[in-house]
Image (cartoon, rainbow, N blue to C red):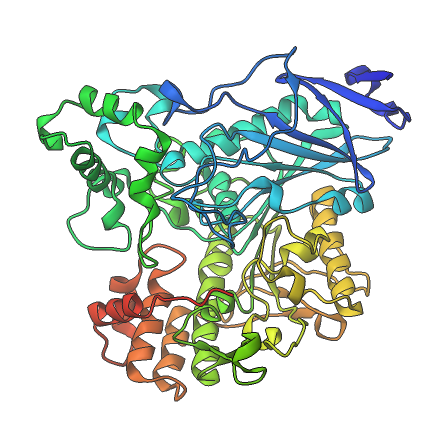
Length: 594
């Protein structure tokens, strides 16, 4: 079989038809696979496996030009099994610590260097993997190169303990290993992407949820300077925690149960070591932690409750400025002056609400108990919609308005915002998915990618994306806007000539945003929501009980972003007790498995 080794000297003549294409990269030789009309390069190592003594260290470059790169199975990073994360298996964890790989989709032919779009998956930085979404259609139809990447998750990606950082130096003193993984992958792209026909001077990072959060993080990280030129944050947020709070906390919080101090204490007890941390040296503690198996370490995180969170992105002053992500976005010393898009979904939280037994139930009466086919019913539609409205509006404030208003203060005028509203889902006997899910979190990604049969993604993907003119219209527009932005730094116009205008902040309202929806609803719009206006609405809302209002208040001010409860709850006109609201959440944390 004839092989074609493409070097930089052949960059502008890659429309050659060949049986096999092999590229020699800095980390080995990779063979193109033909897939959905594009060339697909899979499981390219961009850094050394972070195992053994490299656990909890900055990624080290993988240089092996003679390495034969082969597709791998199950090379996703360590995480809890989850059908929403894409990997639903038995056991305390799935995945491997050897997970630092990336994939590349390229058009089959091209004549000029192509824009590069670098996808960062979501999953709370605790789950997810690169393979869920297939961007081959975007690459084929819009002449862009799409890179997708794995990065360390959870406590393998963000972990601070004096016994680790206290014995390390330089960049290894960071606690943001997962962030550095993404930066390392961008460095690999800068060095190698021209071999694939890409333009290393035109890289757009884009990601959703935790991926959007990571996009915002890279915008302020000095370590990422010069590695990308445009950025799109989809349903992102700006949560950061200090390394000291990641290590030990005096007061109870959503992250306090899983500080590294508490975890190490559990490990010592589990290993029958009759000493506490204060009686062991940092060297002894480090040796214990580095010699733990993946399972023996991760099992202490795997059974956490729904209300418990892990301390993740940390303002360590090395990768992320000490002032924290939200504050750094308004600091011209850190923020990158590049074109930026930020957006959120109209019904961000509906899928979670529609899984909670507090809001929904299963009714077997329609087809009887013989067939055991239930219908999902909403117990109280008014409360269901109220919870969604306030929490989703608060997400937009935290993930879109705060970041863009902060960045605008530095003089950046090339800013764009959107709200994704498309919700033309199927209505079946078993459920009204338009009502239950709507424009929920992450439901926009399949339309953006043109990939409706997700690889282990949303468990309802076969049900909520009906073939329709509405879906095709919205999908085509999203692809066109996103790829226009990657090519030109402006999203331009839709296929029906709706121009996406800049964010354009002023004192009386939030900036203008594009409503992404079916044809008759796609338009530019704006709102005037702040936490204060939402709290005033909440106080007068007759759809909710007083306790439910307090729970909504807690969620608005503590979920998806730093804890603002102490700072802002005093502006609420009602009377709420935080402990009572937290107990309500814990007591009602049970979920229906679809």
